Image (cartoon, rainbow, N blue to C red; front, top):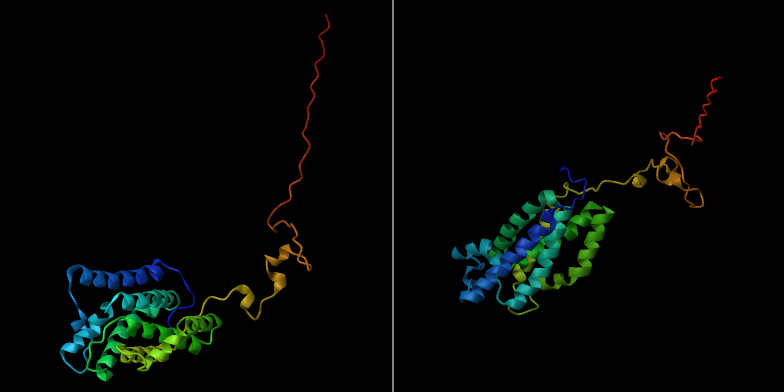
Amino acid sequence: MNNQNQFKFTTGVLGYPVLFVLIIWTVFWFEVKFGYRFNSFGVYPRTLTGLRGVIFSPFIHSDIEHLYHNTIPLFVLSAALFYFYRTISWKVIFYGILLSGFLTWCIGRPENHIGVSGLIYVLMSFTLFKGIFSKHYRLLALSLLIIFLYGSMIWYVFPIKENMSWEGHLSGLIVGLFFAIIFRKNISKPKKYAWEHDDYNEDDDPFLKHFDKDGNFIETRGDNEVEEKEEPPKIKYYFKRDKED
């Protein structure tokens, strides 16, 4: 099992998601600024040239609305990935792009499939099922949060909307579930606090010793602290006899 026993905030937790967002917005800005259209670099199923879209398609979006709807989920889900599963985060992202893109290439309609939504579904599916498989209350809470925020995304793995790559969404969902299964042993276990252990004794807690049974604060001195009594100032008197004439 990988050493993932602590959740730790690093600059990458926010830095990498911001970088991802900047990249896809920069590509779209370039298209608008210089009049280029990169749609032909999307995944075109079952053609040799269409395989290049496995790499390029996550960076290409059809319009500003398409880009906007993908930006926030990409940032939130990738930040959660880097925070809770940092040791396997790059594997999930890199292989998630490749596998979801290739699966889209296999099952998709003969159209150019573009957008980062395939990766978003990988992250959503992985985070959701990984938390369920872990049976840890913090990761379960994360899964419930994902359901609350993005549970409606599940409907878009079906062909309910025209001009939407439901095949890419379905591919991402499948790949994310697959990752949650194969990385099942890489369950992140945060470090337990003292009060969470079975052998915890409140009487031995150094913090609780400062309170009585009613919850009132008691000012105590440390065991190693020596009580010093304040001594009154010492006054010395000197006298001198006069010499006899």
